[in-house]
Image (cartoon, rainbow, N blue to C red; front, side):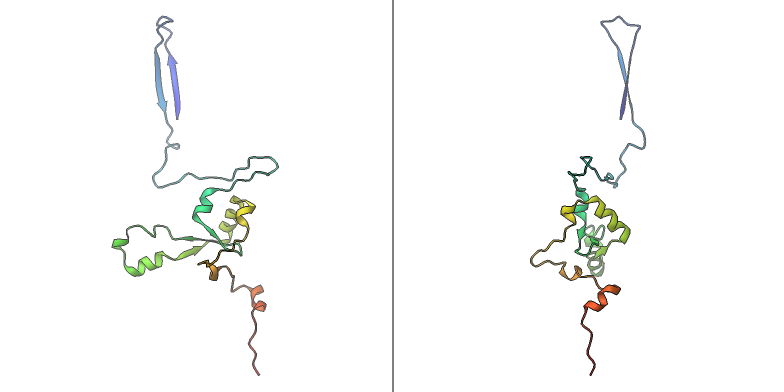
Length: 145
């Protein structure tokens, strides 16, 4: 928002007449349903204070192998008019892409990127990555006599 004030020079000095005009550009006005985009901030030149982006902490869960998961959008909206199988589908979590995981890693600091171990973690089955070539030799092969 830009406020422009003009002072009138035709009136005496002790009576100053101000005309204020509020100028608001179209791009500054917030759009409905769109949140503010936040970028990574560094508060020190050497990177000693490296604050994380709070939105990433609130919305995403980091798995121990580096990927992120998040719930589906709108999973708790208008449940009364959705079928039960749609509600069950909405409760699933989505795995982020490799590029988005890289971006989210850059938006967090080292404290939040460390693997975390919680007792009775509901995400424990997802912390092991499967289906990758380097994972095949870790599993014990079947023995056929």
